[in-house]
Length: 131
Image (cartoon, one colour):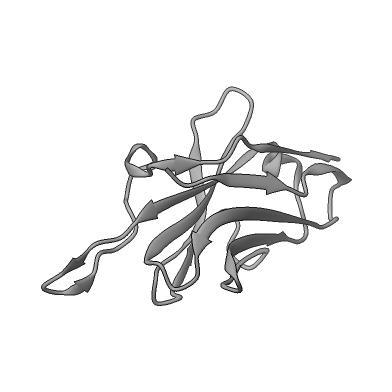
């Protein structure tokens, strides 16, 4: 089981920025999908962004152009979510998640499509954006 620990949440006014971090005990170059999810009050959990093993990053439409996900591999994997131009609707508990990828005929598998398929989760960090 992989350990994930988020940090960096807080309260900010609309238009502000925050940077979330997710520390892991995943050794560098180990094939994992990394993702950020969020769950707002009264809402279902949704994916914010994910990074494939080849570095390809995908964002939810709601955060495209405002959030940037990145990853470090030295010495253990850590990944980040730079959140700019925050809006009140970004208020949520943010979670990092990781899922081990498998090698197949088409190369490394892709990130899971459903949050329930991610095997490893952090405890979450709260982001509150006031108007």
